[in-house]
Image (cartoon, rainbow, N blue to C red; front, side):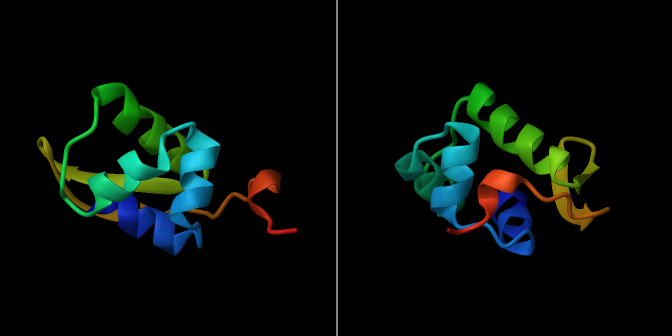
Length: 81
């Protein structure tokens, strides 16, 4: 799962990614566990945020085959207090 890999590579918890993208934590957990496929707008929110943080999603046609982190771009809101 590319979303989970990108999240882990950036050192983001599921809770932090859910907060940053306004995606429900439960939705993200179910999605990463392969229990359900979210709406297109949910996937777009996750991908958009991760791409802004420097992740490139590698595709072969319509199939995701991996990620590449071009440059980790910090988000000031991601730092733990």
